[in-house]
Length: 235
Image (cartoon, rainbow, N blue to C red; front, side, top):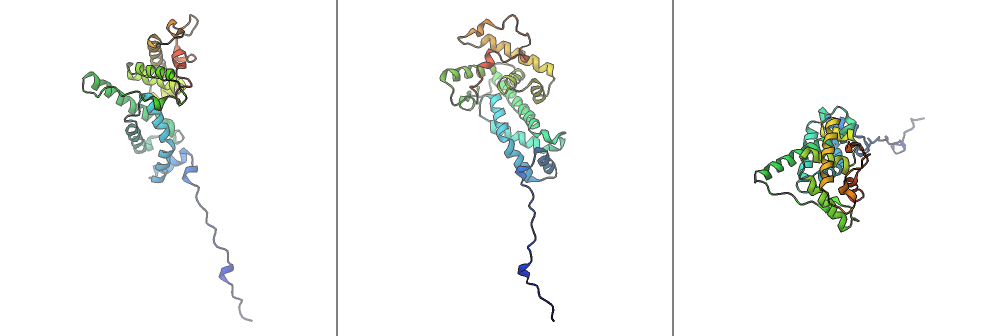
């Protein structure tokens, strides 16, 4: 008998094992790939965190003007220095600190140019980007007042207060984002809070100031009246 021939059509095709999608990987895994010059990993990191970065920059600035440029520059800096990131899983907070520094630099430069009479003037407060879509005209007016007052503060005080009272970050996170000590953050927030309490105009008991039994360090207390003016009214 001759040899039995085997029909190739009955042979099983090799099973292809697909690598997991990059979008399913953690930040730490993506950072590892990015360090190996994987451009797709950089793209996924960008798409995953760009909304966070724009949101953060807009909240601090109070305006969307130039925010996209600030965010793009921040990503370029982050991707260029991604090898310096000590904890690959902390990419988001590390990016946040870069965004905060970029906004700080822009605010300080704008402030100086305006003092010299060379600036273009203050950018209008972008309430459409800041306020909840359900906010009333009265609430929007209060938010506009808060941001107008913030613009008169020293840049570092303004940023610290916004990160704490608007973004709602813990003091330790504010310190990490701004690259300063916890004690420095508390002082900055307290200075900004006292200024806002003194100048914020409202029909409630704000003008009476803190009660006698309120902790002197307002940075570590519950959100006070100025902070409450933005609760539920900011996107």
